[in-house]
Amino acid sequence: MTFSLGWKIAVAAVVAALCNTSAFAQKAYDPGASDTEIRIGNISPYSGPASPYSTIAKAEAGYFKMINERGGINGRKINFISYDDAYSPPKTVEQARKLVESDEVLLLFANVGTPGNTAIQRYLNSKKVPQLLNLSGADKWADPAHFPWTMGFLPSYRAEARIYASYILSTEPNARIGVLYQNDDFGKEYVAGLREGLLVGFKKHMTGVVGSEDDRMQHSPAGVVKVHGKAPATLAPTPDGVRAPQCRVMAARPSRATLAHLHRRCPWKPSTTPRCSKLRA
Image (cartoon, rainbow, N blue to C red; front, side, top):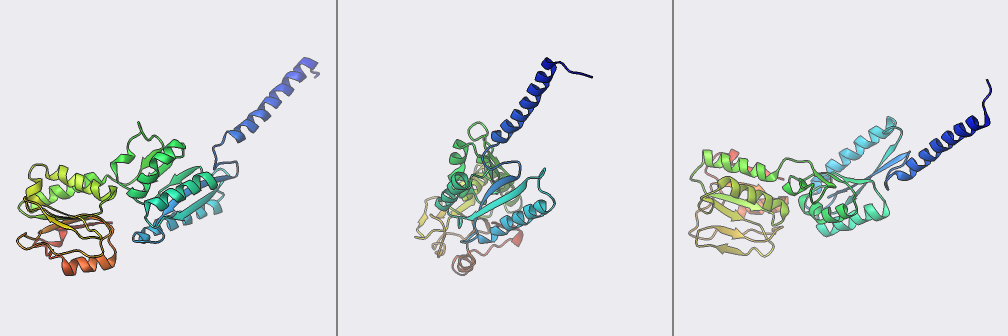
């Protein structure tokens, strides 16, 4: 069978178009992706008060290694780049910029903590770099209208705190409730949930306690004890004349030394069963 010159030219044009399409597809990849590699960034607290959570990133690294040993994803090997931020938002920002601008990762995956993820959310969205499966239960990650490149993972902290409030009010309706929370987005989500759960009578039921470095303590006319700040070194005892809480809710990541000091100095001796004492790390 013979082919006319015009047919041969047409076939050659189709082949050339396919070749050009392949080349175009290669160039169409976003930074961090190619035919052979996918670069994924991660920021975790390998040091500092939340360092135990670094085991999550280490497990992820092990899992991605297993995938690579099995051939990768459609032949692409995963390059998992994880940096330490010591659970410090300024350091989180520094590491995020390094991952995006120097390492040119395709996305950031499973970063630990509400404060750090908050600090880099606007930056990552402005760069259109996916911020996927944040290890935080803050409601702000579910805001596709303003931050379409951000996605959360953990259950809502607010919803969890509302459950605590419902449980406490159903089992200990007359108890004073002490709350130790971090004075940042993580802790404030819990306080907001407790307020919503306790609704009317919040001031009658709740003793709000936040650890601080200066340990300032204020006694409001409503009998609510507050210690403002975060990252406590010491916690002063409840002032005379204020009844200690029977239930407590913790929304903080205090060190072991801080917890030991809290139990020594702060006269929190719940009269209810240990079920009423909640620790959220």
